[in-house]
Image (cartoon, rainbow, N blue to C red; front, side):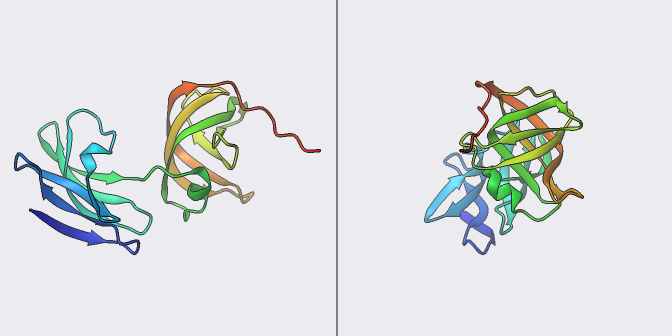
Length: 173
């Protein structure tokens, strides 16, 4: 059995379904496929997403579940390409995965720069995390526009996933 709780303009549906053992599980239905959100979210150990109760037109999903045997609310933020994150309205939460640090902590005061691995788009990130050029990272924080008109992810959490050779400068002829 399943119950739909919300629908967005992209016809994505979120709700609750019973798994094979009769436990509640939060789901996302899109393009004719129902997906248990527990199977696609890298949640910390102890989390069980039980009820997805809302989804907005940016794909953010809210709901509640269990964490260490207590009821807790959650907000799931979709992982976006850098270019899509830059188009979000100010104060939206953006999450980027697999971005490459191209200007590191200490090279530019108070921020780092990250780019898509194919160099198609980049963005400034304000974070306390110590990142170095060539780090491959996941970052998440609030999008804003600074006084120079630059898009920035502020108050960002950042986690290094790996390393690669720093991206070479793009040359023009």
